[in-house]
Length: 316
Image (cartoon, rainbow, N blue to C red; front, side, top):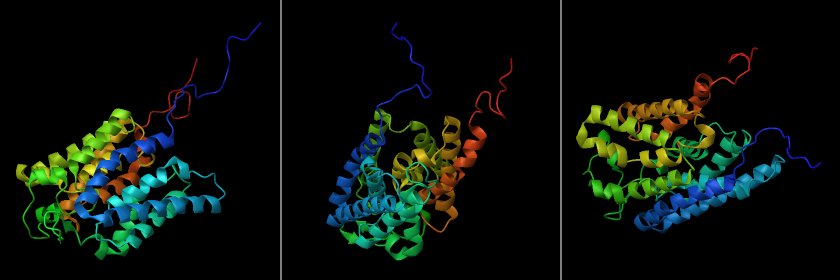
């Protein structure tokens, strides 16, 4: 008699999602903002992105060969890291800055800890932090004002903080991206459209980004009043960080409760750095700090497995 039932070990849920498909969705979502960066900041934006992506892919390939690991170059995760790192660079940065940052992000932050899924920090943001610490002059100045094609160090958040003088741009300019800043953070509307695409595709969940942006908005309203609220939300890297980096699977909590704690913490840290820290922007460091806190958050909010010591006892 032919067997009607087949016994097999878990998991029993199947999905056609792959890392490559998820990363391809992220690349598609970032493409409009990439096009805007080239339009506003010129050809050097494309040079930085290409240099960063090539360096990330080559470094991943060489590290996996050296460590005798299966190649994961085709999963496109290194491509995403390269794009996000380049998005955190001023358009005036030399090409070798993108190369060094990508090599550090992939080799040190990702591969040393075991590769994709084992890194405890977002590689692109960690690469940016390394570059800021090592070559601050290239990373924190030389911002181009697209409206005048002149080098301007006064980003909207620097003006709000009072660390630089200048005239605040219009809200419409911030939406469109016609403001000084790093190449990938300026066009809020295109980043939001890309993020909505990711939510529609199921690539990311809305919890972290809404709670993160909402926390920053509430604190900005309390601290600086309604007149500065939109500058805190759209005048820096909050939209880029909330949609594309804070939601990283490997470095954010597992449960919805954990995601809320993580996002609120990132929002509080962002405003603390912006208001009392040494930098006008705090998104990168706030996400990195909450990345470090993620294992602790998961430890205390993840439900215990039924039948496991410390959880619900499986008693008859």
